[in-house]
Length: 470
Image 1 (cartoon, rainbow, N blue to C red):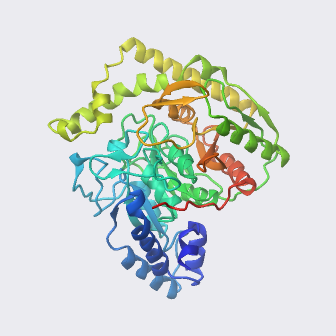
Image 2: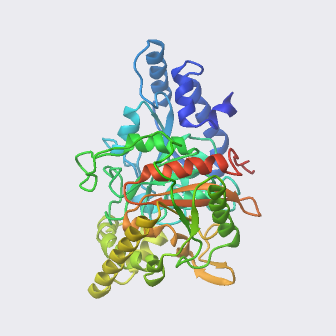
Image 3: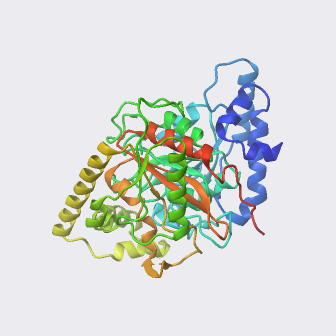
């Protein structure tokens, strides 16, 4: 039964608990046992939350008494260690914050708890969530469960591994340029970066640059992403970017008034893409077409005119530096290499900063025009499948690129605030998951989830799980 429980999704577990087919205690204990069995190999979990089993017992008492329960009643969840959790260590991947215990929950943590979910553990990340690999000086390196010699990505790498490896059915991650979608693609799960401001960032650190940070759910199924998103979105009265009232139908698969129009691309300014990744995107597009969804290969010239990754770095170095300088002052010997490198990067000139701002505005205009003609953009999440730990450069199709290239297909949607989802749809020749990315217009999360739900039923790799090596 434990094997069934650890790979059941949160929606199924909630139903099983609600109908008394299993108890919350059984579910929580199964996931704790799984953590004990495999986490020493992958190092995804950094802190177990005290009281999870006691909360599970209370959840079972409520069910037995016939009480009205929430949609995630008795279901465990995990959270990246950048999310504040009341009474539970939140150390942000840094010795500078070692031993830090917040008094209050982040808004997103509180909302899952209000839905009945039980915090099980906190998960690993790079220092300050500021790298595309999950490694830090405090809690070490996280390994990909599909191949321990490969990275699970960052910055929500520990969260993606916990879910992929059956240690958690549902989690919370944050995304600055890649950080929920990239790790999801590396480990074969799903993740949603909603429209900027849809999910409050209150209680998640760092906030700078505020224009680019998003919080988002991570899970193994699209219906879990939809359920979590429905619970997480909406203003909280504290995040000034979270102002749009929540309006969302969690039903999946309903036919729209007209066919959804899908454009897909594998180049158009994205730089070199691994052939297996490109083939996976084409396969997803063809699967949609074969099931009655109009699809067309497209290009977006603005992605070729303005390199989104260049725009991102010219903007955000200036905006994040003051925050990092404040928290690291006097603790320079406790900083990771990535943070030191960022602080040593020369400031962007005012002229270049303004030009970058104008480039982002052109990207927004281009996407606004694109989504007049199409409802969805289908493209790669990452240019390559999960790679070995610590690579500084990649060679793709004979071209050598900097490791930052891994963010090329994801960062446009942080710069513009557009919603985007990552889900698995393929496998590399050496057995690593390959994802596809689905983007839509601002506040069109239901469209993304509709197409993702359809692709999930068509996926050639559905319900595959890693066998964690020795």
